[in-house]
Length: 244
Length: 250
Ligand SMILES: Nc1ncnc2c1ncn2[C@@H]1O[C@H](COP(=O)(O)OP(=O)(O)OP(=O)(O)O)[C@@H](O)[C@H]1O
Ligand SMILES: [Mg+2]
Image 1 (cartoon, rainbow over the protein chains, first blue to last red):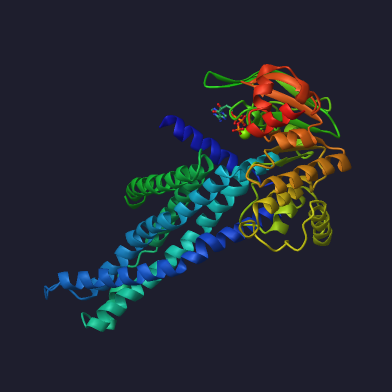
Image 2: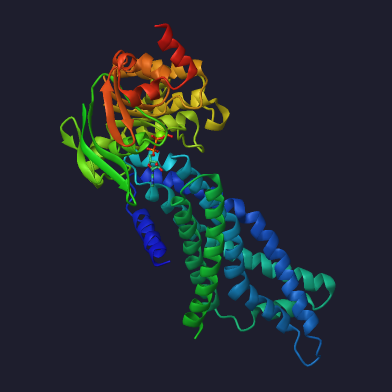
């Protein structure tokens, strides 16, 4: 366990050296941007839209006390989406999609000696392969998360208005009440930390695979499990640190 | 010329290379032969710096290379090309991008110059019109050729090939062997080849080192190997029915 953390730090330290060629790094970054970020938009939109709707409806069904104001539905949906659902749950979903693909891509390169090939050419393979992925995830995940918040709130609005639970005016009133810009900052800080965990753990797991395709599969599973656990643990730590 | 001096290497107490000394000569195809598990790949990985050695040293034309780090290692690395067992082409890149990769990383050539160089080395390995194809779209023999093209793109002084013809049919294997030996001659490289293919040994074995259980057991050329009375080498060379018959009929 301790030695695993040590090895992780060593690989990530290697990855954070200055790239040999800036142009090559930017090209890799664009490729990873596309592969890790752009390709996830559809999934994130779909999940956020439905979850926003579900949260709003559940809140509405649970509040049938006439004393509770209706704008509370919009308010609750907003808080849940922004504080927890978008940054944490979407990050976990991205671990499943992006983390496993990073681990298996780099792991396959390891077992087919493509990483050895980079190394004997005199290239720092950790830097060449992992740094662009960490950078891409840390740049793109915040965009995805903000997008998820917007889509989720729209989903909530759409669901309650269509089902006639509350009026559009009440819901939007709720969205606007007790607006605290820090909640977005808080969500984005979490997202950045989670994106780093996701890409670095997956990169490390792939980079250190030994064996063949079976081991690549295992590494990819481990990457998902470990980064999910870390994300939840860091969620608790960050929530405690930032919201108190 | 590459000098290997008294090198040893163990993994967790298991000795894999035991005090090996040999030289690989310039302009020749130097073969390392031996049974599976004898330590050929480990020896080659030590030579190219993928593994550190426990004892001894390796010199490239008088320059110490073994166990170096960072910058000092890079100087020699830029002069070496390596053909890995499976080719190790980057599978997200096309053939052209694979061969161009070292040019992108280590030269400041313009795109036209790089394209021209790519076509030149692809012609050296006798490939045409595959520039746009991806590794998954070409045959095993072609993958090996593209890998050779990538390895020689920067005009290396040293070429290392780990089992260049494993997984190929005998005819294609021979073509690859001939290609490597032709390029070695043409560019006067110091070429080191790991193999357990007896055809290669007889065809292109200008200098042969036989590794037995991690030790250098015999050295010579492809003439010597047929006439040796070294028992372990004989057992290895004439291990198949076909080769035994050949020896008998001689
Ligand atoms: N990274 C490693 N860690 C531990 N042991 C290793 C490692 N690499 C190789 N070995 C061991 O070293 C010995 C020699 O392996 P090597 O791969 O050099 O054999 P080889 O001669 O290339 O065989 P083949 O012809 O099958 O490729 C084997 O017993 C192998 O288990
Ligand atoms: Mg081998």
